[in-house]
Image (tube, rainbow, N blue to C red):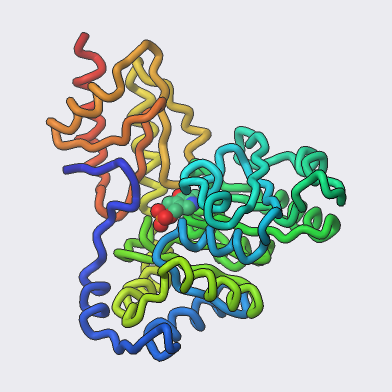
Length: 338
Ligand SMILES: *Cc1c(COP(=O)(O)O)cnc(C)c1O
């Protein structure tokens, strides 16, 4: 199967499996797991924070961040397209009694800071207390401009807000701009990073912040069932994700460019290559197409795509350039048939 549904499908590398088998472990709830402790110290240092916390998923890391920045009756501002607004089960509202204030994302993924300013609630008991701005980078595969991050950071500082980054794919954003991850994370009070997407770890995310913030997050993590005992087995793979898999993402980005170029030659599809900045490609249909039917036909040809309004393709370690050529042939044969 050529699986273009997501970079979450990546298999752990042989090195990861070996490291997992041999990882020294202890009870992490007692703080005794050497592999977890090493991962957290190392990532805090690498990404420029006081402290770090290993979490079960990106959803958990974002929820811990929202609950650690905001109390009951507080509010966070985010994009309409934000993963931590749209795709995380409303967890901040359900479990944190935190109100989301979503605002329109521009095509480049940014949110106008003038809109954020208007959305900040006055200090008045009619309103929730606005505490936090949450951004996402990459968002829909797009990289937020560094100048925008600097402006957003200064803006939040001047308005007494904290600023969080959902950096599920921040490593892709760094590689695409030839930057260190810390050049991006430096603009934020807290950051979540997925290790189980393009970075190929089997499980896990990181949450980064200052000591007080991480202590709060650790308390919430325990309460939410995230005290994971001998989780050093997972941390051993996670360590290789951040040390050995980051630079490799450049191949995924090249493959996404290659795919987008090929898709442009299919008349039935509209693929804007200028929007392809990392490992995601989106195509619209020029005519009405039953996308679920198309997805099931492609599956019969060994190509997996995720059906939604658009066709979304995600490149990753386990799809090669040749796989992409095969996938394009399959798509061509299905779309030009009738
Ligand atoms: C995948 C993703 C998450 C959530 O990560 P999970 O590990 O799947 O819970 C959060 N934010 C963004 C932007 C993501 O792409």
